[in-house]
Length: 188
Ligand code: URA
Image (cartoon, rainbow, N blue to C red; front, side):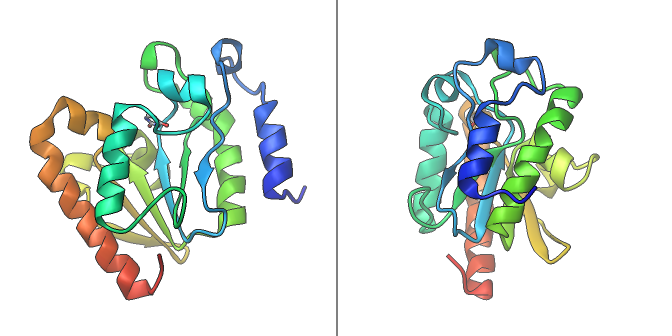
């Protein structure tokens, strides 16, 4: 089945592939420019995202938006933001492997439509799923890998930065490296 953004969104909003559908308020499909070449991927919605139906709208999201703005990136202009799982895991626990596996097909379709040149994983869960299962995010954040013609990198999760502000400069370095990569590729 060939999806368009609209048919993909419609099907995803009806999803009942895992038990998270029972407790969600909203499916958090994703947000941003559907023609962007840069895709950010988080782990899953928290409470604010579940209530508003948009990724990264809580305190972590505000911090993310600030770091994005510092390198001329903006969810309403030149990037797209999605999550590994589209529905909130209760009490903000990590999404279970079976929930990730049930949901990942939606993200794959989003990637197929977007055809990003750069994918930025926000935090360990996304990095493990998309870059490599044994990634050490504290050591390997800011590193770029090329996979099937797409540049992949990971940075620290904004929620981790709120818990541990001493890591903010390291994360900011990752955003500066990202800007260098985008300039090199002539995108965004
Ligand atoms: N954390 C995530 O990983 N994704 C969101 O959308 C919000 C918080």
